[in-house]
Length: 157
Image (cartoon, rainbow, N blue to C red; front, side, top):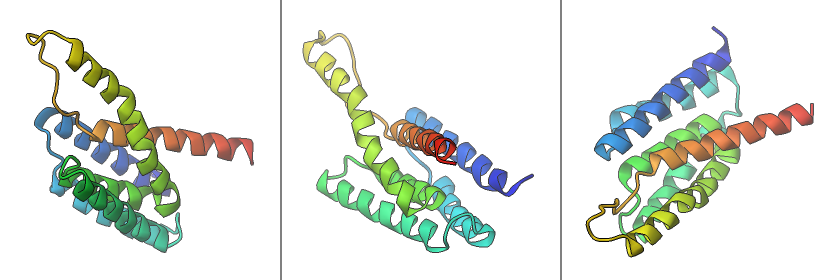
C-alpha cells in the first residue's frame, strides 16, 4: 500500500459515511469527523505529503469559517457540517480546502434553488424537503476540486 492510499482511501470511506448519515439521519457523527481530522493532520505530518502547517491550518481555518457561517445563518449550517469542513481542510490542506468550501455553496444552490421554486409552485399535497443535507454538496465540491487539481497537474507537468 502506498502513502497516497493511506491518505485517500480513509478519506473517501469517511466522506461516504458522512454523506449517507447526513442524508439518512440528518447527522454527521463526531465519531467520524473528529478522528478523521486528527488522522489527516498526523498522516500528512508524518508523510510530508503536505507542508506540516497546511492540514492544521486547513482544519482550523475551514472549521472557523464554517462556524462563522453557522452563526451568521442562525444554525442553518450544523455542527456536523462544521466538523466535516474541518476534516476536508485537514485532508486537502488550507490552500485547496478553502476552494472546496467556496465551491460548496454555489453547487448547493444549483439544487436548492429549483427545490425552493418547486416548493412555491407545487400543490400542498406534494411534500418537498424544508432543508437539504449539506454533506453531499461538500463531497461534490471536494471531488470536483480534486479532479480539477489533477487535470491542472497533468497539463502542467
